[in-house]
Structures are given as C-alpha cells and as structure tokens.
Image (cartoon, rainbow, N blue to C red; front, side):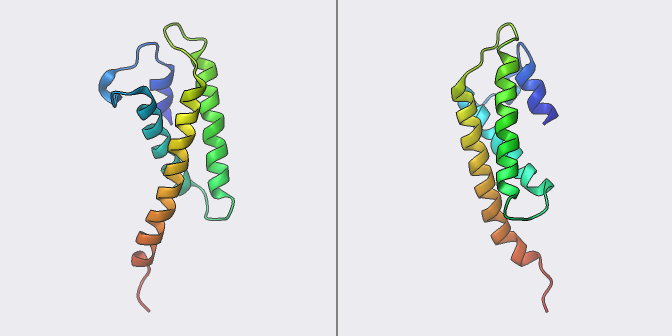
Length: 108
C-alpha cells in the first residue's frame, strides 16, 4: 500500500509502473492489493467484503487527495477501475486457494 500511495500521491509519478493505460494501472494495483489483503485477514465469510470495503475507501481517499494535488485529477472512473480490479483480485484469490490449498495439506 505504501508503494501504491506513493504513486497515487506523486505529482509526476515515474513511468516504470505504467501499463500504458491509466485504468489498467488502477485495475492491476487494486487487484494485487486485494490478493494481498485476502491473505492478511483470517478466513471467514465476511473477509472478502472487508477487503473490498477497505479498498473502496482507499480508492475514494486517493481520488479526494489527488483532487488537491497540482497536475493530478480525481475521476470516478478510476474508483470504478479500482473496484473491478479488487473484485477480480478477490475472485482470483478464491480460485487460487481452491487449487493450492488442497495440495498444501498433508496426506493422511
């Protein structure tokens, strides 16, 4: 999150993290944050909703702060791209856990 915040709040972020399309950057960043977030919370039925709510709040906060930074703009479409990426990240995490977790269990 520190890296994402630095990129989001820099008046002129470096091009090293640029996928060539602003919405793809948002999508990839929030998808990654969602996967990491899912690993940070204990398993449970509400975990995905907690992660998505936290990332929604973070995405909105980023846009509010960016509206105050010269050279940066706030866009609702950025929050939409954030949430699409986060949702796919949560779904990808669930899929990976179904594939990886059974293999990680010791044989009885």
